[in-house]
Image (cartoon, rainbow, N blue to C red):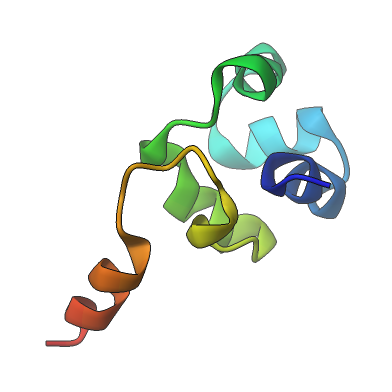
Length: 71
């Protein structure tokens, strides 16, 4: 199971995840084919617990950002 599918499952479905993120269900569905945008990953992590690092398409070095967040 990929990270987005995991987040959708944890949230209780595409519609529920979309509602929690403030987007339409169609937007979340489109992420399945186009990839989840980096801007959405921190919010997905907040509402589902699926870590940003689990999303393979991300171009952000989340480990680096986490290590500098408290500095």
